[in-house]
Amino acid sequence: MVHAPRTFARGFVRDAADIWAYRELLGNLVRKELKVRYKDSMLGFLWTLVRPLLQLFVYAVAIGVFLGAGRTIPDFGVYLFTGLVAWTLFTDVIGGCTGTIVSNAGLVKKVYFPRELFPLSVVGAAVVNFALQLLVLAAAYAATGSWPQPGDLLLVPLALVVLIVFGTALGLVLAAAFVYLRDVQYLVEVGLLLWFWMTPIVYDWTKVKDNLVSGAGLTWLFQIYLANPMANVVLAFQKALWPGGDTERGQPFVYDGDLYLRLGVLLLACGALLWCAQRIFARTQGNFAQEL
Image 1: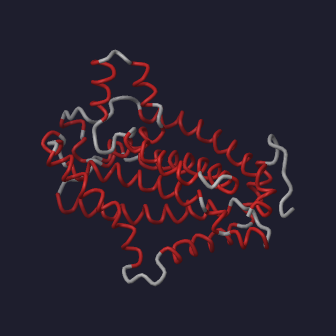
Image 2: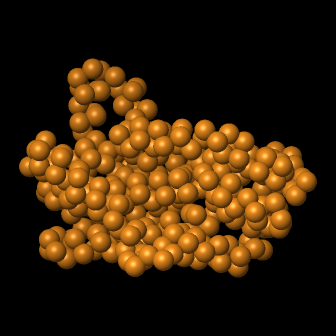
Image 3: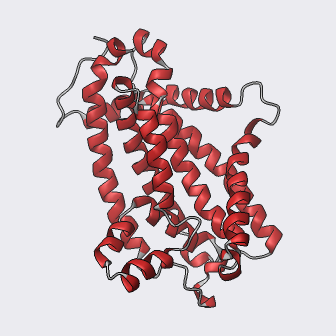
């Protein structure tokens, strides 16, 4: 075996130290991930902006214009993009991590180093792309002359950490599962499509509250909806980065709960999930070479 199975309960600290020892290799893998993605491309990193901008255009026209959401939600384009930029990071992490062990089968079978470096390199590359997309958001502020209020900007790094920890945990489990079951990639595609519509990106969260709580009296179902980590991340991005959500304007679309508390609780839960995910990954990686 390339890597012997380890006990589930023990070894997280040792594995984390092992990953830290290979941090230089991790940096090289992140650079490789970015270079391979845009190899022989004339536009290079600009391609990372095409998908979110195309999504923004489609949803802004279909929902903002045709369905009239742009008439009720101010700065609707920026509202959309604040949610899409978070969602794109999440899908880049999940989609990229799922196939990363299989796509690097040659290295997995020949050389030893922590296999977690492959999913983590995808996370690193996704964060770089996320930073580039924030430049588009800054350009939108400059074009509209409307800037977010600084009071809630601390929500952004907190929400970003929750997103990265949560996405990394799912990515580790999916990367390991894909080695043994190739149908995982199709389940991920379907799951992300469903998850997208369960997250208030192209609609405001008050629509869900009005229909579930006020309309049907299903308060418990609304609480389950709000337990979605990505819903909280997107709500935090909207509250911090969407100028139209300035509470001084009296807009009803900004979440009025304590997002700092919600994100803090989620961070603890996602940290525990990451621990479990890494132990699952460590437990299963001993047979990666044989399965590949």
